[in-house]
Structure formats: structure tokens, C-alpha cells
Amino acid sequence: EIVLTQSPGTLSLSAGERATLSCRASQSVNSNYLAWYQQKPGQAPRLLIYGASTRATGIPDRFSGSGSGTDFTLTISRLGPEDFAVYYCQQYRNSPLTFGGGTKVEIK
Amino acid sequence: VQLVQSGAEVKKPGASVTVSCKVSGYTFTSYVFHWVRQAPGQRLEWLGWINADNGNTKYSQKFQGRVTITRDTSTSTAYMELSSLRSEDTAVYYCARMYTDALDVWGPGTTVTVSS
Image (tube, rainbow over all chains, first blue to last red; front, side, top):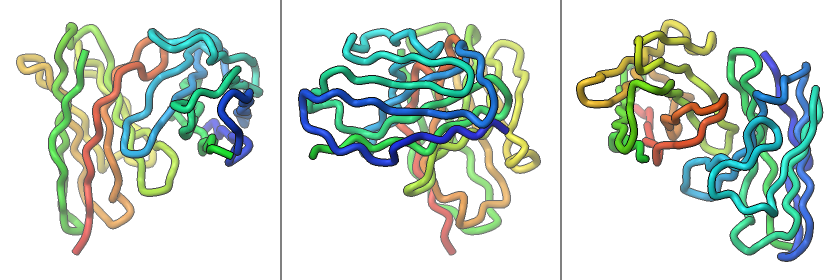
């Protein structure tokens, strides 16, 4: 099973700041199989990025994904008030599909 | 494009629960549907998937023998049954559509509570 480790656990930032979230895999993940999701309280996750760097439909361009192999990054260039949430990475290179433990982006 | 899930359930330990996921807005049989759960304060956890076209399934080894995923093409509905419930199965259960190896459309979630 591929274990995904996200860091930091919590990121305290102000609106307008840049957020950089990390996802590290226990073994190499083909970039095609790495995705990022946003989840707000009481809501289902929402797909942001797939294929490590492709934005899903309707996702603003302040969200970007990068990385390969075992190290991936989600960057939010300028935090909007609606961006404070929990972010998860997910892989499906190997079964089982696995998720990281999440990074909470909170208002400083 | 919408996934509509069945309502909240309360079950006793040892019982089974079935959660449904009705699809509308696109061709049901063109996609694979996954089931994912989230226990309180925990990370998302994958249970398995079903190919809505041919009914093929794949399950997480952790839930093998306890989870069964089926579908009804006449009603465009996928089902997830989890048996031998225990308190640790208390969670929100989601169905989600897979597209390009990511889960691009999610249902709203169904809360399953296991309590004696």
C-alpha cells in the first residue's frame, strides 16, 4: 500500500498569502495518478487537481499542482477567504487507492 | 451531473447497512464508481469500486468479505453494502465517479452510525 504523508498538518495564513502544501509518497507514484481535493466542514471533497498538475473544471488558476515520483506540491498563489479548508492528496498508482492525512489551511 | 445518496442510517453492531447512490445527468454505464468513507476526525478511506457497464468490482483488502458493491443499470444506481458492522464503521460514506484516475464528482455523503 502506498502511504501518502502530507505536511504541514496545519498552515496558518492570512488572506492574500501564498500557501504551499506537500504530499510525499512511500513509493513512486506515476504523475497521472496523483490528485488533490479540497474539503470544507460538512461537505464532500471537491476535486482540484488531477494528473498532478491539471486543474479540474471550474477550478481557479490560483491553484496549481506540481511534482513527480514521490514528492508533490499544491500551491495556492493568493489565498481567498473561501480557500480556508482541508486539502487531501490521493493516489491510484497502485490498489488500494489511498489518501493523505490532510493539511488544514486556517486563518491566521 | 449529480450523485444522490440515501439517507442517514443507525445500525446495531453485527448488522448490515446498504447505501445507495443514484446517478443523473450523464450516462451511468460510461463510468466507474468508487466508495470512500470518512470516520470522525480521520482521513478518507477507500472501500472499493464498481464498473457500471460490466459490473466488475474491486475491493480494498481491508474490507474484503465485508463489503459488496453492486449496481442497477435500469435505475442508474450503485449500492454499497457493509456487513458485520462495528463501532469503528461509524463514518460518512461517499460515492464518487472516477474520471482520469481521479474522483471528479462526489455524492453528498451518507452518515452511518453503529451503536448498541
